Structures are given as C-alpha cells and as structure tokens.
Image (cartoon, rainbow over the protein chains, first blue to last red):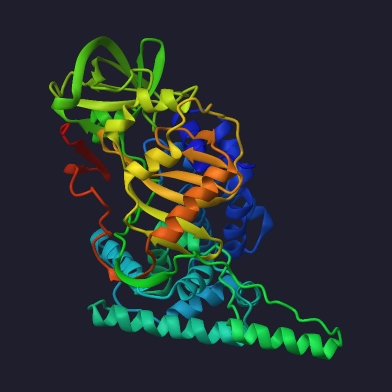
Length: 188
Length: 335
C-alpha cells in the first residue's frame, strides 16, 4: 500500500530523499499522464515529471501542501504548459492539446491580458466560484478536460457517456463560464 | 484575454476540484422499481424461473436529507506555487523549519502558542533552515519552552531572539506513541481534542454528514481502551467513517480520526499516522450508532461562502497575520 501523503510530506520536510522515491511511486504515473496530455510526447512528459518532482523537492518546505496530489498535478501542468508554449512560440500546434485551447478560445475574445497578479488571482477565484456552484459530475468533467487536458474519447469512456454527449456538456460548461465571468465584469 | 490565460487561470482551481477530476465518476443507479422490473424481465427472458433480487445500494438506516449549505471556503490558490521565497524575504518562523532540542528534531507548525499556554523554560535549542537558492544551511539559537500539558516528546514551543515573548509550536515529527493511552496523555487530549462533523463514506457517492456527534461519544466508544497498541506499519483498509478532529492548541485543525472497514482507527493528528486496531465490531457498532440514531445530511453546496461551522469551533483560533502566503495563527488561551 502506498504511503500516506502526510508521511510523504513529512519526509520532504525532513529533507529525506525517500520522499522523492515515494512520490514517484505514488504519483509518477499521475504526473506523467498530465504531462503527456499536454506535450503529447513520452520523452518530454517523462522529463517534465522529473522536473516536477524536483520542483516539489525545492518547494517543500517551506510549502506544506494540503493536497499533495493537487500540488504535484499543478506543478506538472505548469511545467508542461510552459514547455508547450516554448515549442509553439509562434503558432499553435495541431494536436489533441491544441483542441483544448481552441475550445477555451471560445470563452475569450482575445482582448486585454490579465497582466496584474491580482487580476489573475481574481480570475482564478471567479473560476473557482463558478465551479463550486456546479454539480459534482459537471465539475469533474470540466476538470478532466480543462485541468487535465484529457481527450474527449477518454472522458466519454470514463464517464460512461457518448463522445457527442461529452462534447455537448463541455460546450455548455464553457458557455456557462463565459457568462459567469462576463456578468462579473471580466473583460474576456 | 487569450485561451492560454484562461488555461493558466484554470490551473489555479481549488485542490478539491483537482482531486475530484481524477475520482471515479458516480455511475447512475436504477431506481429500485426499475431494477426490479429489469431483473424480472431478465429472469423471464432467460427462462430461469427464478426471481432475481436487485442489489440496492445500502444507505444509512437512519436515512438522510439533502441540505443546502454554502460551499466550503476555498483553500485559496497557490499562485506560481514553485516560486520559493528568498531567504531575506521570509520571517524567522518560515526560515527555520526545524528545531533541535534535547536530542530530538522538531518541525515548525507556523503556530504562535498563546502566552498562557507557554510553560516552563526547558533550555536552549538550535533552529535550522536551508536557503533554497544557495543551499546554505542557517542555524540560530533560541529558547525552548514546554507547551502546558503536552509532553515534550511530542511538541515544544520556541522563541526566536528577534521575537522575544512569542513562542512558536514545534512538533516532533518522529513522535510515535506506544499506545493509545500514551497518545492521549502526551497530548493531554482529554483537554485539547475537539471533534466536529462526522462523515460516513459511501464509495463514490457523497458522504453522509452527521453534525451532532459529540466528542464524548467518540471518547466512550472509540478512545476508551488506553492499552491499544499503536501499529505504525499498519496498512488499514478503506475508510468507512471519518471524524473531523482538532488540537487547536498546536494548530491542528480539521484533521481526521478515521475508522476503516477492517477494524482500524487511525489519525493524522501530529505529523505522522497513528494506527490502532479497535476491531471490526467496534467500528460497526459506532457506524450503526451514528447512522441509526442521528440525522444524516447530504450537503449540497450552493455557492461560495463561509465554511460550515463545526460544533465548538467558533473562533477558537484567532488569525493574527498573513505574510508571504503563510498564515501564522495564535492559539487561544486555555479555557
């Protein structure tokens, strides 16, 4: 049985290298899955996963994540997305992950960027508020597609629904998000 | 705004939503009438001549009702979570994550212990912290004090030279009590432990929440056998019930006392798991008592707002400051 997260975090805090081994064993595949969804390349995904572990090592302590899983997921996602952006500095690629961005582009108008840190924070908080108001299964669907960048067929299988149904539900979620943010004064 | 900005912002979604995104989605269940009809039809079509009984998902015998509650307070995002603060930008309590004293290593809880709970001075200790940018290890001498009522094997509090009169809690991460009784005594749990909501687990279905399970019932039915051995190497099975548990004195809030289907009680209070085998019968009896004699609720979260208050929780911890993304709280004085 895998070690409890509290125990793993404790190992990080004690600066014991078993922390990395235990994290790799428990969350290595999870992180790699996220990186693979974004980068669509096994080797890059593996490198990103290793980098994510090192970032965790560098940041815990002082961080003491309430959810180690979410913490690692977020780091991996950020690193993978940064790498994706470097690789597609001039134009978007044509892969499965690009479809995720294309869908999100429907929610925005390409206007002003939220450059200020507080504006980014407010946007993130508004998205959290929107998600908190959704039924759990819709939130799960949203997270699967727009946090984890899962492909539609994968989502459909997991949720036991048809691909078309998944796409329609996601479109409604995007529309709902756009309306929610617009009503709250965000310049999309 | 571009799609990339939105994708980044979504990356800051709350931890619980991130976790939910990888949970197994709930599978729609047939109503019992539909299930019965389907089973009957199957029996007829197959010519089996038997009456198939549908499996009905068990629910707590006491039933439960749906309750609309404000969504729990979000943990807050962790913007740019891997931007580690520079040494010079941190306060001592953030810099010095560990404390050596009397041959033991303690770790910080970022908790300021109320002056009334600071006990006798124990001697000098050495704080240590590492600059994550230069890898340099820094050390600092400070005075170490007892936390009143708490065994120094488990926790102490200590004062930084530049913050005289303020003692921060440091926890012995390796603290491993031999028995439940020792754990209770060392932490003075009779005085310091409070419990809140009780969650009965139902697999992928939402937990059923019980709001009126008093701490005394937990003591009588689960914590009464002081001789129970702690089994640090145990690997307990799935949880069937979880009790929100707090030791406000040391900054432990909304931790858990969990019962498992194979008869373990485990808790993550203090820095490592403690596992006590109380037996399946006790677990089943407690679950039965909770579900049959108390009202359960399925929480339906309406929108963001204040967290659901837990019994006896009102402002026992007073926030005193937020700096560099770290909340330093001061524990309440002893009652």
